[in-house]
Length: 417
Image (cartoon, rainbow, N blue to C red; front, side, top):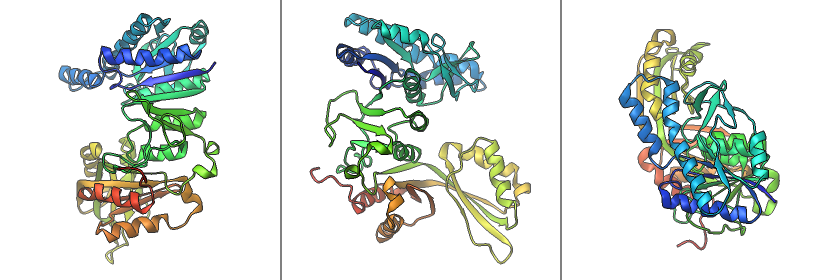
């Protein structure tokens, strides 16, 4: 007998027929003798609808009441799935975040999970009852409903798997696994059988939309084996298993390792350049400290060689959604920073190559720069980590860059059409 957490996203729960399909998948696991907890998202588009109601009611809405409203979508689908499971002959019940409870911080709209009390849940699972749990939500101080931020149901599922000491956490989505890149851009992209936590964390952070970044980080911290697979088909990966397993590096043998695991892209970037910043100690801190205080996540940073006048230009990127707020913060801090002008550009994209093989192989960055240069693609900024190289390029070249890099690193599938 295995203990499994199954998570289903919004497209999987979009309507009663799809909920019945989910119930059938859950029943197969139950019939196989497994203990099952299911974490569900709201129906596709429902959270956006509820957010719209909040904004329509008041542009300065109370964050606590916002969480009450937007968490309702997952409450509805958890109840509906429990009903569908009962109709299919399974014992099932729903557990809301406050009933377990799933304890979180009080940062409404972006709460972080603290601990989960699974005592009552364990007893229910032992009695053969399927637990259906709304994702994306918890409770602060035992009183107020909280939500975890967009995509938070993935984090809910991994956190539940860790708390329950589950054997595996299956994330069902509208894709059938993790690919070497977006197959809509590169039809010859390959589905991967296994990916390390570190690689998936990097891929998620630089634009891959398969899993929420926080959920991958939590899985790595708690050593939760995660499997990504489709709600709509039962295909196989190259290693004979459905979907893609996200596991520790020790679970991937040398035969399965490759230099580059995948290529991701992100068009939700904005570039900001401050010109003629005073070239003195503390000037860079004066730029990024107020941005940090404002909760702005800065990614790539480039400081040019100082001008003969004793000044320099500083370029960096922020999420496109935070551009207006970033410009406002920098404008208010202009006297403290001491710059001449601000130049910004949203017509940029970040392209990244990721792979644990970089640790032991030289030339990865060189291949990237040479390949892009041969196609006339100019690199505006560079950021690296131990297993990642990212470049900022003009947005119009994004798909070309992804395609040529995918080929350059030998990732094209041999049997693809």
